[in-house]
Length: 143
Picture (cartoon, rainbow, N blue to C red):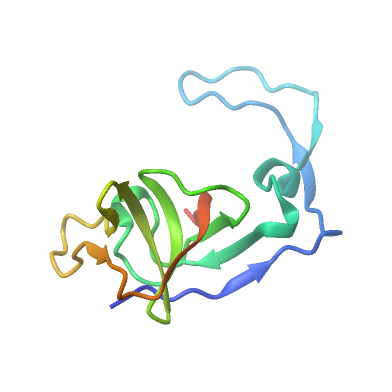
């Protein structure tokens, strides 16, 4: 079964700006800094506004790549596919997100869930209706 997605389009005029309080150490604590700078998440996470979409992940076939059920992935259609990229693909009428293996003999869509053997690689052939729809650039997680 392929994962299902609902795309969210970015409004070209939209921006989400917040205060960046500074770096935070993941080791020993450091004194707080009084300096703040503005952080625009759209500018930080989106390179091509007109070709970038958000999807909510449904399914667990990609958990070993950090894409869990309910996560939001940012997908850019302006980036050319490359070997081992994580991509939203359209195959035979359905969308799925997989790691894309590109080789001389064709394309294979690879799941990433070692704990669940029901997810098998998908060999793409000329019989399939197939496109690599867009490349995953970021995963947004709820902790």
